[in-house]
Length: 344
Ligand SMILES: [Zn+2]
Ligand SMILES: [Zn+2]
Image 1 (cartoon, protein in one colour):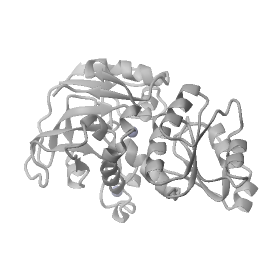
Image 2: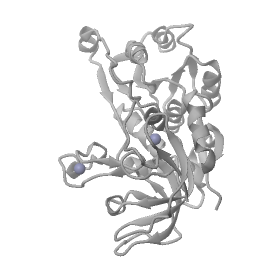
Image 3: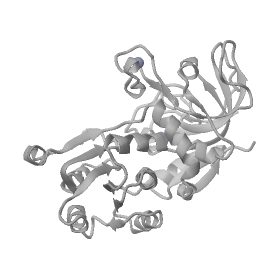
Image 4: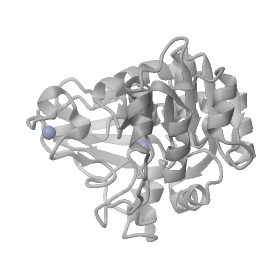
């Protein structure tokens, strides 16, 4: 089978690998589609670590083609999306259902072979934890494979308490910012301001239903937000770019008792300087979210067929042989979601 293998920063090769055979408790999936995440690009750039020799990709969906001995609840022929978290099930966080914070967490595409290959061997701990999610007939693989980013954004929005009638600013109109936008709209958020320095991305955000767009090179986000909200500020700000300046401007757009979520990882060594009185006197909440829990995956997967605009985020498709081209494209911040399609 063809697989896109990480050999260290900047060194990605499409190679022939043997098709794995599922051992006890394991499941083999024939990949239908996989999508590229900006965190894959961060690994490629050396900003985030992954095991050398690992098959990259943690956003994938496909069909079960064989199951190992002792596998229950999953049958050959079923279509599944993957929650790529391998959790221990026994640590402080796991017993509280917070598997994304597991002390012994491993992740498909980083520590174990992931989805950028014609077949994916699903490890036993992932199968046993119920991290293979059944996909309904009305959802194609190229949307089902994006369950992970939609789950991450759903968790992020819920952490910020975003809901019906609320107001939200999203800093960064890349794929994750736009996924936040689609979900926030579906959750009934009334006012959604999207900020990005790239005019084409703002046009996409507007087309997808942003109430207002802000270009921080032209206007301060905080000033635009205060004008739009009669001086109140927004309930929540999601910072969906890995940049300290974006966090700084986001904090100033919050209303009193508002919540800011640092959703995007920043380059190592980044430092944020913050006026503590801004937090104290305005009673601000500043938090972070990373990945999501299986519950968010289940609910995001259930929402995906209703998000009729979501397929518009797919701007590029590549065969697995050209996977490195998808990395180059996303590295240069061109396009939105890049999909690796696999012929059935
Ligand atoms: Zn992802
Ligand atoms: Zn654990």
